[in-house]
Image 1: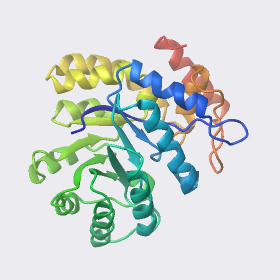
Image 2: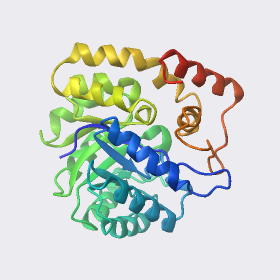
Image 3: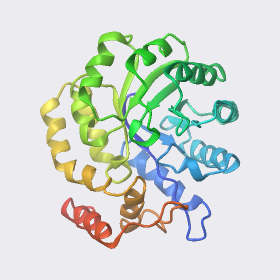
Length: 292
């Protein structure tokens, strides 16, 4: 259903704070040209937390229109209130997306049974495929593999984005989840190893900056060409690390700005621009890999 390199797309903004739709259109074309396998629109990297619902929906609609079905679009529809996640899912389904990515509710810190109830409600709200998103470093809650296994029985829940960076979690999931349940890495630093050990894809922050390399790495891994995949990954490890020296998407936006892919690195408060030393660090890395 979904596999390969899916970019966790940033949402470009002007210095005024408004969405920069011109740059957004250019980014979509940039990913299509560079063989990105799919786009995750307005996920957490897309600053979903600071986009009101009306804007959230408008941005996804714009991305769907500009991909023109050339590559799949998975829409972020997560929220820490189940009613809000259900509302977003039902509204976004009308836009022509190919599926949803829904993050573990943040701050609330529900019980595992609460996660089952939450994601069941979200999955019931649409007939489209839903991928779960487990990122305990941001939500302060780890969705247990046993919880994922319970949710995997729902016909609309088709996979999980695992951003723990723990490769033992992959083998754990493979041992108890259905073989056709999609396993995506949400951690760029371990994404290649995740795929070389049987994962189906990555939902990548680094793909914002190096889409061609990430798609090629994934294609090698899927084809069983693990050495070739690892060679590409080794060249990208420093970039993976440096993009996360400040909270995502601060440095991916700065990198895209220096690459002239977006007009401004603006982020909505409470996110702010990177410290000068981090700006310098990421710019130096972009020079070393020949991007700027």
